[in-house]
Image (cartoon, rainbow, N blue to C red; front, side, top):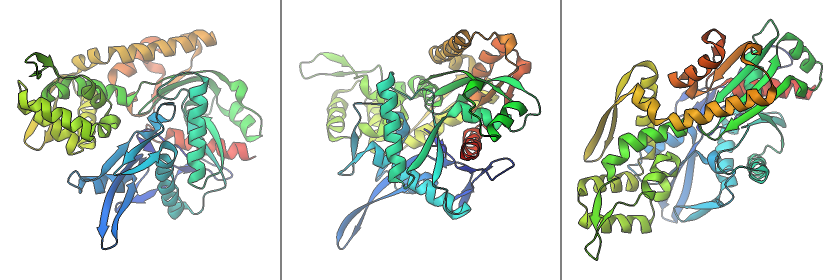
Length: 429
């Protein structure tokens, strides 16, 4: 089971042969992946109000039909290593992070079992090389403890963790007929993970014989930068200036002050946007609106927050990012009640915006290669997987180091789940 920041998936492996994804039926359709999101709303009846929730595609459908009522929760995996995040209030009820994750996992498990029958008691679960947020062994241990607790709440008490890039390697290896040294680059929503390891028929045969494959793993690295980080740069440059960032308002003493920056920092991380919809923030923005130099922009900001348009914003950003992977320019468009934000973006502009992120990714890859002592010539293939592997500047980063001819891609949203099922089969022998 691959519980991801943006998407989750389930795969199974029989006694022999390739693994297979479990189809997940939701909202009248069948999916290979399950959006890792929740939507809460209150239902009123003669006995009072009841807080109900939906997960995955059904959460998105309910949210889009809600006209801004309710609470949409996304990217909850990004908080697992955050020591100072213990919970959040949702429509008057307090939730810890483990119960929130478990609600997604319960629905994912139920839909998988409706399609494939009861899941086995032993489940192999993916984990990033490094979780988003705080670094250090304590933060890593906290994230794993929370994740294990959430799976237990969802009825899966016998779990074993496997590194997500290693699982992606098993997926890649399943189609090989020769031995290789491969660099796996797995780009998720919250983390980018890398693993250098030996794969192929000989390594696969050892695993199938029940031998430990730890010696095949030459090195692992990761950084808390990935799809959400790239999205945040589009929000910063194309959205927040239209919502009042950089404008001014008049304080009670008559002094002109700049708009507070912190709401826009929250907005850059779309999974934090829902935390802005508090009485305190709404009152602050209402006060600013009265004396704002550009009130229409502040009013648009208030609309985004009060109407809970985080998912709409994310979808518009994602569409622009995907378009820039195929074309040298695109038009970013985000419609909200009362106005439309339209901004042209060139690919070279976007690549300049994300230079800090790509440099951090490059540094992580270079560090991994230095630690392992393996030169570029010693790498037979580079397997790029995950949504951000489509971004040209990311692909170029690896082409420049290892050569375009060594790059391979595939299973962008499902390679980890497929590999986890293979790991589960081999571990059971």
